[in-house]
Every structure is written in structure tokens, then in C-alpha cells.
Length: 188
Image 1: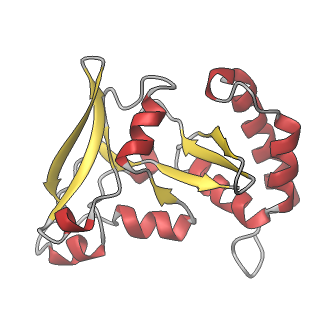
Image 2: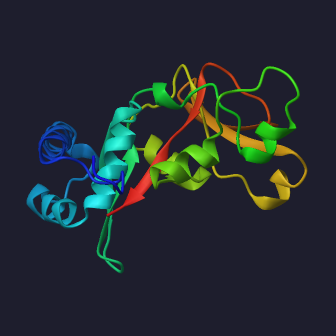
């Protein structure tokens, strides 16, 4: 890593691209009409985005391409791990929720972690889109972007998949559980 702390060594970049390429090739149902060579060119031209993808990978998110936005010429990556990423669990929703806890505070919160990683939490709509590509969060759950009106009342929303159905629930934003984390998205 360099002074900016957001640049990967050549060796780490090459290994990450190899991992992403293998995941891409092994999951073609997620991106049927996309070509890896075009994605790789974008990745190699955006080293800061590679750093964010490495953070997604490092925290067990298993990022993969799920779409391409023609208007912005961006590839869209989501965390595609079978369960909510292990390195991002046992966290509350945001800093306000973290600071409101008097006892048994979690180590972190979803919003700050996502920001530090350079990614966005999935929205409920994005989460439901991900679930069309496979069966995710069958044992865990994931915080998703919470509308301001819900958050202003102290709540936050999360989703999971049970009984072959995607559910959206609510909880106090300060709550945290060993099986709840968050999934992120990144545009490259």
C-alpha cells in the first residue's frame, strides 16, 4: 500500500483481478451479455475502485459484476457471498445509532464501514434484484439503505431470504446481531 492507503501493490492488483475474473466466469448467469475484457480494462484504469473491490473481497463479500449502466458507462458490482459478508457483521446501522448505545456497543456501523470502503449499501430494490440472481442470506440478514423518514424515527431496515421469499424487516438502528451485516455496491 502507498501513502494514500488506497492503492494496491501490483501483486495484490493482479491477484484481485484473477479472483474477480474467475468469479465472473463461474457465475455467467449474473452477467450474461458482458465481456470480461471490457471489465478488466475499466478495473485497470480505476485503481481506487480496485482498492474498494479489494476491501469488499477482504471482508468476505465476494464482489461480482451484476449489471452495466449504458448511460454512465459503468459496471456495477455487488457483494455476492452466499451469506452477509463475515467481515461486516455484528454492527449497528449508523454512527448515530452506535453513539446512542450506552452498553455493549458494537465495534462499528454499516454506514461508516461502507463509506470507508468507498461503497454504498444496497437499497431494498437493489437487494431484491440481487436475489433474482441467486439465493442469498438464507441464514443471515443484511442492512439496506433506510429511507430518511424511517431513520428519523429511530428505525432501520434489513432484508433476508427465508422460505424462498425475500423479506424486508425493521429494527432499531442501534440493534446488532452476529448474523446481520451489510452488502455493498460499487460502480466502476
